[in-house]
Length: 333
Image (cartoon, rainbow, N blue to C red; front, top):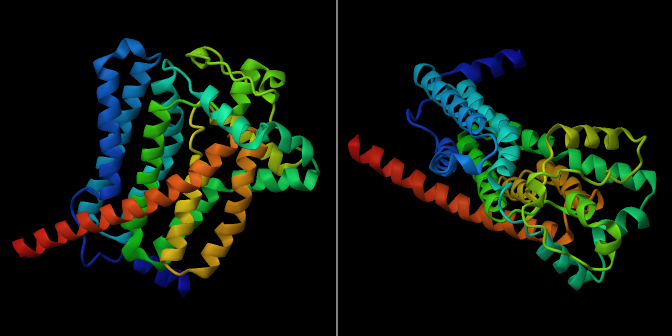
């Protein structure tokens, strides 16, 4: 009976369906347009311009298919499919940032120096050694791999408990991702696992941080991920790392930043169970990003600040644009 009611609610026609592109799709298309313009204007600056452009074409096609499906069948199920489509594309957009910034000069020497000056050491080298217990290792790995499941959990909450806010939540989350990706492109930072492998951990531990230019364009070797190698979550972490990690996207930490956005969304809805599910994993994730040497400590700190700023800015922007659209529709009526 419950399953039947849920199915009916998903396929029931929306009373106030919006026939155009959703703001979260417009955010993606804006990012797509700007990055496409960069590729087309100077294709020889990129290693794989054809695949970069073809990927963008398919992303646009699937977005338009979702729009067409919603025009024909304006129901919550199709809206969910449109959101899921954009979330799935994030797995392609992330490594694409490396293709866009790989020929630019790298800034790891700056961020690594910030860590050493502020903390008197490199936390990403010290923490895995000082806290090497298998339980600590597994907790760090668990929190790090919980990143995408937490995004899915948050969106499921909005899908089924707050369907009227699906588009707002999707805009805030996806908009945050595209802002982070833009920062990653114009401020390339590979992270300790790549940078310290390149310069040597001995130099890094002494606070020596040489500039690397565009070294990572041709070199993607990384330090082995520290931790208990027999641990289940450590193995999952290695599998995820091998599947899509690139020497890019370290500053600020999008893991910490987007998780901060999820916490603000849960607080916005006053959903205690969601908030207190994300909070402990998000807290551990802050330390895990440094522990597994994916980020400098300043990356994680900046992630909290950036995530908070993006949440409030994007929520405000959504409300302003949504109100303008509603006023326009009311005037036409």
